[in-house]
Structures are given as structure tokens and as C-alpha cells.
Image (cartoon, rainbow, N blue to C red):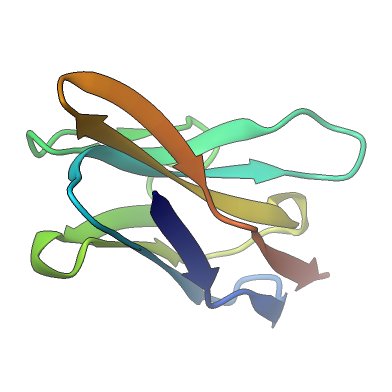
Length: 119
């Protein structure tokens, strides 16, 4: 079993910055990818940014140039640096860890961390 724990959410004014962290832990797993998703009230969960084990990154168009995803493979941790935050960035941010166990892929989600952006 893999546990995924996010932290770093909070309240910030528009134009401000926040840094989210997500740590994966467990036994006998290798991480194929880690990423951030968000869900605003009344909306579907959407991709924000992902990082593959091969070192590639993917961003939603709405956050390109403002958000940066990074990983610390030694700590099984992924970060999301969010700059120039806008009210429309407010959401619950979820971390997803995709693991490879005996050749099969499994997704594990964190409980989410709330980001509130005041205008």
C-alpha cells in the first residue's frame, strides 16, 4: 500500500505564491509518475501538472508560466510552486502517485489540500 500526503495549502492574496508538497510512502513500489490535480466547487477534477520518472513535465495551459512542478526522487516527494495566483486557481489540490508494482500501474491519491485565493 502507498500513502500519499499533501501539505502547503492555505489562503493567499491574488498575485501571491504558495508551495505545495506531496510525499509518497509505503513499501516495495517504484514511482512511475507524480502529479497535481485540482477540483474547484461544481467543477470536475482537472490536471494541473505532472512529472514522469523519465524527467518529463506536463502543465495545464492555464498554469503554464506561473506554476512549476519539481521532484525529489530520493524523498519520493513532488512539489508545486505556484506564483502569480489568481482567484480562479482556488480549489482543492490533489496529488496523484502512479506506481509500478510487478509491472502493473496503480494510482494513489492524497486527501487534498485547499488553496484559497482572495481578490
